[in-house]
Length: 107
Image 1 (spheres, rainbow, N blue to C red):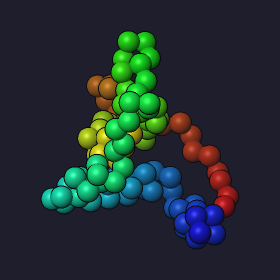
Image 2: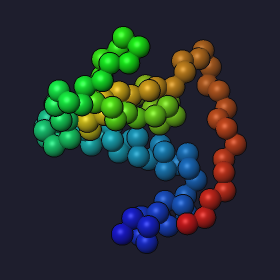
Image 3: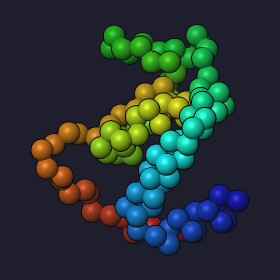
Image 4: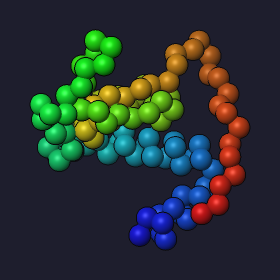
């Protein structure tokens, strides 16, 4: 389903447009009363076997959101509600910085 339906739809749009759409939908969806609690119940797994300590920092699980997705640290709590053990945010700069040139992808 993903490769045949969702991926071709996503590749019809500019990457930044899809990125902003997804982040806006996450922000709005998880702002609905009760949705964050439901997501935490479904996706946050507390298991001692998953806890990792790296360079003195302890993470609840080893699954994280990579740098680049939450460029402005707007979704830290929302991504935590989805079960990520850590969220790497973008660099804080005084002014917006241009991104890397886009890649041309085909589905």
